[in-house]
Length: 309
Image (cartoon, rainbow, N blue to C red):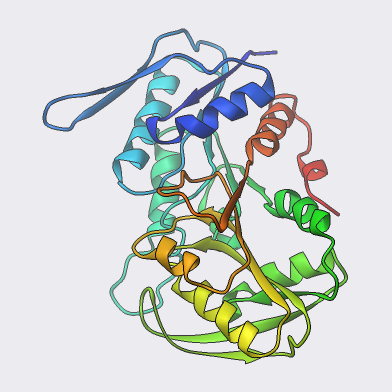
């Protein structure tokens, strides 16, 4: 059986080191070279011939992070790697998964095409913004589930009268999945947007009085929606409200919005690096989850055992 070699792009080095340690391997030696005009040239400082190569890089802004990933895939294929799996803890551009108005790009599909064209044999990711993005790929996709990270933590809190809330109608399926692990009910915050990152109005569907409420989302960008939803829930008589979110994009005034909100805490994972510190933000690691998935893929085993049932 071929050897496993784990490498990291420059943007996700902080997480790749933890994944490699959890797997029991050292992180592979690679160099990220940049010319004075900004042109990139990543290369490997060790042989990958005949190896199962796993390249870890989230595709958050700037776009250089994504281009670096593509170049690393191409370099590994040209160096005769037996297989190349791209490990993308946070799959950027996933919010653009359909034509929701005229004359727009379906960016998620384009990103999928580019990853496939680069020569990648497989993609591993976590909590896509929309499950159907898996169908944009013509290569196998291993879609890991953040519930295996959050559910044990929420159980450890031993909250009574637990209730789950979706911050919008689009997140109902994800929230219902969370609620099923606790045999709990759910409510929905129905929001209307005038434009991207700006909520015009929001109303609560369901009763939250006396409940400890957990808002569930896959990503939080500016934090405006979750802060507004938390206030709406508390105004309707909830005992407490906290939020869980896999991908802490947290751009713009996000940290200010979270700090000034009524949220008890915002629980996130390390698929993205935090830009600032916040007393309300708690980070859980996905390193063990990805390390287990890498081992199972290398051993040609099913990854279904990694999902909570």
